[in-house]
Length: 196
Image (cartoon, rainbow, N blue to C red):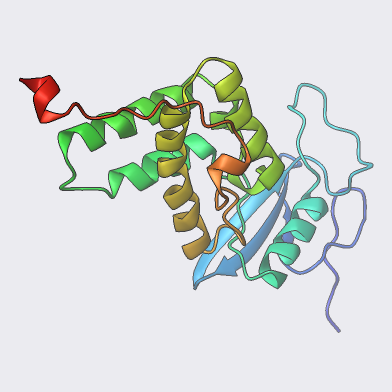
């Protein structure tokens, strides 16, 4: 008869769960044939956090997130990729583009570095968050054309995340004119007579 594994509080551990000598809990699982694991100082949400340890999600809550991700056909992300990291990953793949395009990528990366939206996890970004962020950019003085360029980088970056299975939906896939006011002025070309 098999002996059930228990933690130091005499609770039965599930498959994949172990408790390390220092008291930390570990859950081991396999994804795409590779062994992965995550840790927590607490097994259940109600467990007290050991003194001096940083706040962390309970191990079994992390296991629930893993199950939900797998049910939706997504890869599990414990830390989660940020918007800035996603755009950086996207721009690194763009080789052979014009100098002006590279400068545009750098501009978008600099905007995201200095904005709280850049630190947001991509799996936590909602459609309303994307729209509100673009509206705030316009309220802070950015022109329609520069916001159009910024979204022109974010939309394919988020599409790459969808293609990689990190997201279910691209939240930047909407008509920009329905969200912000097009304040750009159309320029009229001079006639040949005026040019002379």
